[in-house]
Amino acid sequence: MGRVAHLTKKSQLCSVLLFAITTEICVIALFIAAAVIAACVKPSSSGPVREQLIAGGLVDDPLSEPWLELSVTDDLLLAVTRRGIPDMTTAGAVSLAVTIKGYEVNIQERRVERQGGEPVNCALFCIEGLAEERYHITYRRDGSEIAAVFTLHVRPGMRRSFER
Image 1 (cartoon, rainbow, N blue to C red):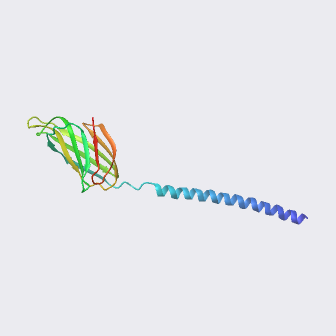
Image 2 (cartoon, rainbow, N blue to C red; image 1 turned 45 degrees about the horizontal axis):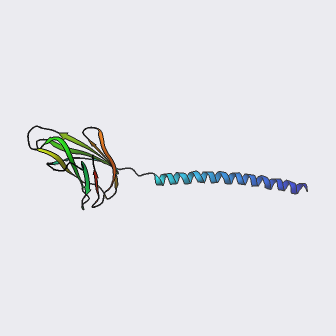
Image 3 (cartoon, rainbow, N blue to C red; image 1 turned 120 degrees about the vertical axis):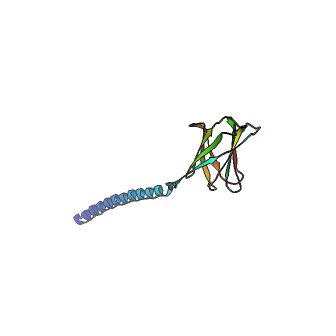
């Protein structure tokens, strides 16, 4: 009887140790699985930063609204129309400093006003190099004032416009 009791205690001890080891293995496996999932869902590097300085074509447009209009051409060019530019003449200049980092696009409007020339109130731009993806776009005008923040799916025919 003593030997049977001793074997029973030994088997109980083995069961407890086996359970503890199995639990530890499960916890370790859980941490490894979490690390693998985290590595899989981590966004890839956004790649190099591309910068463009785009000169705008100045025109006189009878419309004043929408003040900002974006449309995607069939060639995936982003056509930007900026209306209602105050105190601008054909002697001046409007340009866009465009920074593209991954799917983030920052657009900074830059204006140079000069005396002389015919009055104009609209500038036209064309941004190249965008893929058929969704982009988060920030448009700043006249210094650091953020004028518009939006998401645009770049695909032919897409349009986005903003009223004052």
